[in-house]
Image 1 (cartoon, rainbow, N blue to C red):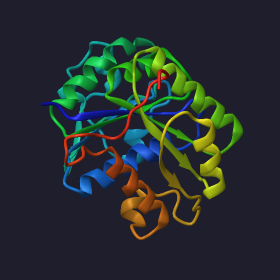
Image 2: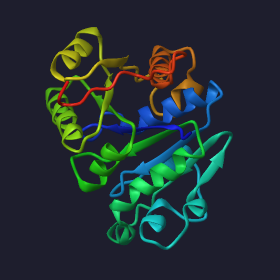
Image 3: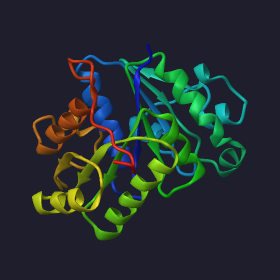
Length: 239
């Protein structure tokens, strides 16, 4: 039986997708789960830099047919990372259609796979939407970001994917309510704006007693299988 896989997505850049992926991975790891992280932002990958990890090859090499997946995995204390290559020529050579196979293979080796997707509705983001068990939408309460998250939610349904829910980042209670009202998906967590703990990732390790860390731990808990065998609620555009 394979692990659970989630695409971390949001139509607009800068809303906290990578931060969410890294912190949820750390929270899941602290609870004893093995976690895979895939940097599927092929145009501007940064997971490797954020986590300070390197592998013999990169995800781009795998997608270009130049390396096996095993060579592109960096391992650290139960965390398995497939970092990308930021060079433009490597982006041109990578085939996004192969992302699905990468996600499926990694899911056989770990408990949870988190796929950090890029901004916008591109082919490289749509592949994880349709491959992963569910999509976690990430947005700030900013109107443009919320509109893009709602559009992304609709596109997940277009590729027969499921939405686990939405995370409101840098949000107070009123902002989270706006997100919940305008994005047709359950609100999984509200991450408050806390510049005093921002910058060093993962916050669940660098500032474990903060409200931000609590929010990411709540999100990680929401994504885990339930004792009765169920999992986090998932929706499609059909309701």
